[in-house]
Image (tube, helix red, strand yellow):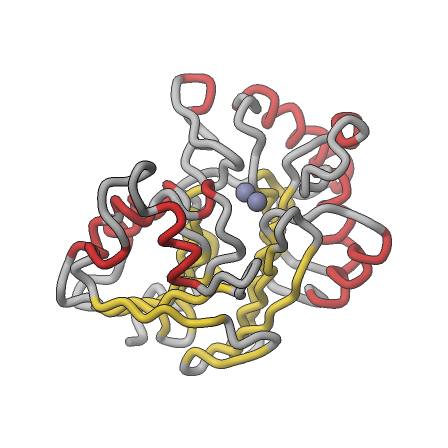
Length: 274
Ligand SMILES: [Zn+2]
Ligand SMILES: [Zn+2]
């Protein structure tokens, strides 16, 4: 259903690895990976971190279906599922897509978290009608939206997404480590996008002690944006210990580098028009 919010991207969770809370994190937010995309009449959710608990607050009234694309099944990208209010409503239909990983398909990936002793009930407890799909990579369609997929470097694997409709596009790269080879592939994948949401958990300096953690430095994320010509860029997956004050300092450096505010650090709750 096409609404007046078509073309709007809402950032529901931009924290990485673990949710955080308290005054030091109030402005950039503490909820983990979740982005709501309204495009081409489709409601598409990227990842199911704790930001998913806020989906009901922004979901269009009267709409009863959405697609949920998982980048990968690490816990910070899944832990919003069991308590998402919309999944407890029987009139809802949800198609959940993930790439098979270690021989596990989508339902098995979710069931690995939603099972005793980690959680009292399994995925069968959702009241919504759930469809568990293998991600039809590298490309498929959700109505008028073309979805492209790219595997990126991360322990256990992770998928980047490019959602396009007419001449507007969103590229979502959560949890991706850098190497010269992988960066060029990312630049090609994101070429000319309207909005790039990209992992920048570390600083260049921190990265020297965090090789193999599966994340990139925000300075590199900015360089990917510049090289691919992204119109807008938001750095996501903020480290759990990163305070608002530190992110303000980074953003000031970013502004000095570019001289405009089209490239910024993502804030939870932010709405961006494509
Ligand atoms: Zn993550
Ligand atoms: Zn991860």
